Length: 264
Image 1: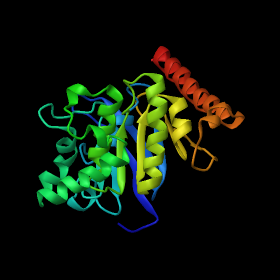
Image 2 (image 1 turned 30 degrees about the vertical axis):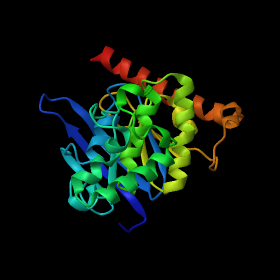
Image 3 (image 1 turned 180 degrees about the horizontal axis):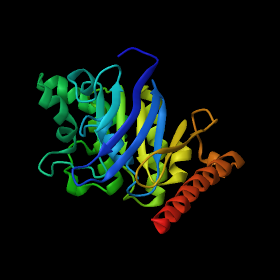
C-alpha cells in the first residue's frame, strides 16, 4: 500500500442504533511506520474509532481509508492485524498452534505455517513455551502470544485495543519495552488505544487526545523523543511535561463536559 499516509480519517461521525453519538467530526492521519496512541476517558469512542479502522464498524458519515482502501476491503484487511484487550487464545491449542491459526485460516502448508509461527515466537521471547497450553501461561505471556499471533501474518498495520490494561504495572512496563522493540524490528504502523497517559507518552510518536462523549480529537501532541526509548525517559523533564499536558487536556475537556451537562 503506497502513499504518504497509511491511515486517513476524514470528518467521521458514528451514531449507534440506540441514538448514541460515539464520534463527532473526527479527522486524523497516521503516517507509515508511525506509532500513534488514542487516549481518552472511558466511553470517549477511542475503541469505536479503532474498530472502524479495522473494518469491524461502519461510519455513519465521513470516510476512513487504509492505504487508499476502505477498512473492510480485502486489500486493507490483508495488511492489518488486531490485538484485543483479552488474549482470546484457544485453550485446546498449544502456544505454537495458537500463533499459527491466522495462517491456517488463510491456507498454505503446515511446514510454512509452523515455521513462521516459530519465527514470531522467538521474536516475543517465548520459544521455550511453544508446546505449552494457555492455562500454563501468566497474563503477560498470554498477551505476548496474542501479539505474536497478530504479527505472524506480517501486517503493515497493528491495531491494539488496550492490550495491557489488565496487567500489573511492572509487567505492563516490561511489555511496553518489548512492544517498542517489536515495532522497530517489524517497521509496522501501530495505532494503540489506552486510557493510561503514562503509557501513551512512553510509547508514542504522537498522541491523539479525545474528548468525553461524543468523541472528538481535542489535541494532537508530538512526543519529540527518538526511539529507542529507555526507562530513564520516564524520569525525564520532557516526559513529565508531556504527561501533565495530556492530563491538562483531559481534565479541561472533562470539566467542559460537566458544565454542559449541568446547563442541559
